[in-house]
Structure formats: C-alpha cells, structure tokens
Image (cartoon, rainbow, N blue to C red; front, side, top):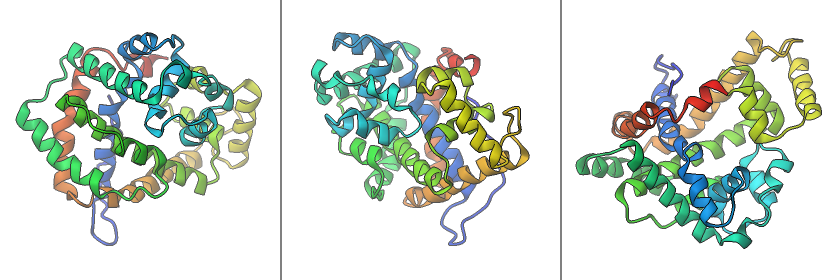
Length: 294
C-alpha cells in the first residue's frame, strides 16, 4: 500500500503531537484494517449466513457492532454511500442477528490473515496491544458512532484478531472524525467522493460501482465542485481543489492528535512498525490490486 508523504514535521501549538506522526499512524492503521473489505473470506462467511450479495454483506459486517439498526442509521454513519446502495441491506438482520455477523467477521479476518501468513510473534502482539489498548480506552467517543460501537464489542479469543479489532476501533474513530470535518467544509456525501476520485487516490470505477450514485447525482456533485473552483470544467482537480483536499486531511489529523496523545509520537511510530507485517502480507498476496487497477 502506498502511504502519502507527509514527512515535514509540524507540531501542534500545544506541543502534544507531531502532525506527520498522526498522519502516518492513521495511514498505517487504515492499511492494516482495509483487507477485510477485499478478501474472499468475507463473502464466504456471509454466504454461510444466507447473504450472497457483496453489498448487503459489506454493510452488515461493518455496521454489526451498532446492533440491528435500520439501514438509514448505517447510511448516516457511512456518509459517502448513496441511499440506494445502503437500502440493499434491508433484511440482513433477518438472515442473522448482528452478533452472528460480528462473529463471522472475526472468522473472516482470522482466516484471511492465516491464509496470507500475516503473523506477529507473541512479544510483538503483546507490545502492540500495550500501545493500542490505552488509545482505545482513553478515546473520547462523543460523536464517534462507529468507533464507539466497535469499542463496545467483546474482543475475540484469537490474539491477532483481537489486535485487529482494536485497530478497527481506531480506524473507525478517524473515519468518524473525518465526517465531522467534511460536514464543516460543506462537502456532502457525493461531493466528497467525486473530489476523492479526482485526486486519483480512489478509482472512479470502484467508487461508482460500490457507492451507487447515479449519473445525474455524480454530474450535480461535479458541477458544485466546479463552482467552488475545486474541479475544472473537465472534472480534473485544480490547484485550489488539491489544497482544499489537503486542508481537509490536515484538519482530520489535527482532530485525531488527541487520540494518540496517550502514547505520544514515539509510541505511535512504534505501533505503526509493529502492525506493518499485516499490511505487508496482504500487499504481497495482491489483496490491494483492485484499489490500484479498478
């Protein structure tokens, strides 16, 4: 996985964290979490619960921690999906209750990590937990819906999957924080997706296929971004658009700085190093190729 270069050290005014460290650990956390949405073990476990369509299974797996919520709650928490995409999950709780979806997700994660050889020695697992556990325990969950839900889930007995679930909590915490920043910048669900694809960091075909915004909605979002000067008339990102996107990422990192304060810069950098073998194993297995080539 390519991590964006934010190497210039910029420390917050209160001196609490280096923003480049916050950005780098956030990228490492996201990379170590991401495989769950791309591996075949997810659909395989969903099929055992009676759901064979990838979209509904995705929403059930990711929102199971919130309980048997209606699809509208999942839509609100996930933000950049269209209502028609999320509405497809209606009925997943009839197929199986959220607790079974959560257990199946853990099974899928464990199976996938074993298949690609994502292994952390016992001492590395223990050290990683000694760093991430205080972050999860000390986090402020106000307004952090998905993070709070995942923090409430009992950790599984498999030590590697338990670490991955703690990674999930922190990944969703940043995601929840990012939504606050997007809303503060008047960047709506489809607009933020169009801007993201314009940067080249998310393939447009993949975004359109999974988020299901139709041509009219996509065109309207593009027109709004053109009016703001963030895209040109051909839909390409402008200098102002790139600056706006970088500012939004920076504001998200600033929001996340307090999350990492319990372990500081050195602890965050060490945690990134400790969990890197998870990402490395899935990268070597070609798991992320869809994100590069879609």
